[in-house]
Length: 77
Image (cartoon, rainbow, N blue to C red; front, side, top):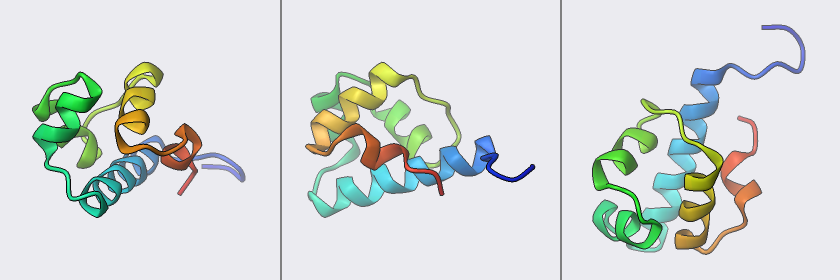
C-alpha cells in the first residue's frame, strides 16, 4: 500500500468495529439494529466482524438506525 491508500480489509474491520461500538453504546442488539435498518441480523454480524463488504445504501440505513451521520461510520482507520 502506498501513501494515502487504505487497505480494504482494514477499512471493513474499522467500519464494522465502529458500527458495533455505536450499537452497544445505544444498548441495541444485532436483531434490533437489523430490524431498524431493514437488513438481516446475520448481515449485521458479518459487517461488524469485517467479514462482509457493504454497499452505500445499507451503510446509510445503518447510520440512520444508529442516528449518526454516514461519515462517522466510514472515516479511514
